[in-house]
Image (tube, rainbow, N blue to C red; front, side):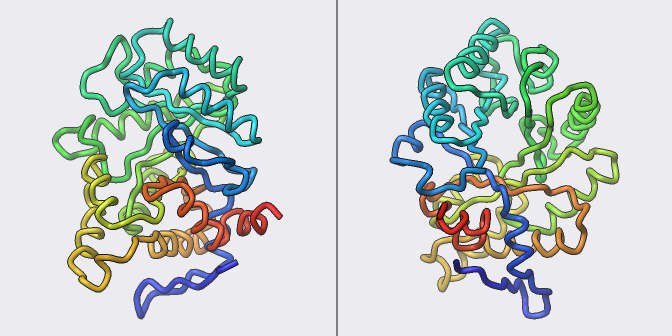
Length: 306
């Protein structure tokens, strides 16, 4: 198991292997039906404790989503499908999806988000409306989206005024439900803004645990493409700076520095709001899973599940 110390700068503190391992414990990962099809058996890659999110891209048939959920559930994983509000036409469709997930795949967890389409397909526009529908009343866990760098779909002016109002509403809602709630964020590349954002939430009384989005190992060009498409803003400069360094341009990006900085801060501040890491395997599920194993994720995937 290739645990190692990370050094961010010559004068930066070192994140110990134990701190890295603690941050990566119980990490989650995101798949889509078409990417999941390429994996013969997830048990050969991931710890059995892994929560697997299933991204629902507009146009993906619900049959494919449910089949992927069932396959992962049958292999022993906790499954959390996306429910993008803006592609759900009405409450009848929402309840049909929930019924299929629960009855066919044993799903009891969900990530609720607005979704990436500009115009809603029906009556739902936000994750708050999904929560208010009451349709998730018997779910064990419900996650919502977090935006460390803001969200221009919600705040076109670049502020985070509406995003913060929504988070305060969701914080209040979390006190009224039996489901465990947390927020899963978009992937980021720079630790300092994330630390500042999480600290600001805590100062404003928002204590929902944060599952921080992390881009897995990938070609730099791939990451820049996804970062632009997904609206990742401030930390995009980290990738742009790397792209200007010809010695690194052809090397695959790995999230070592980002994870190291968060791990060091978490070790120094145990109450820091980041609870777990959520991987976006932009360079492929297998390379991402192997990187996590090599760096102590779930204790090196329990030595690759023993």
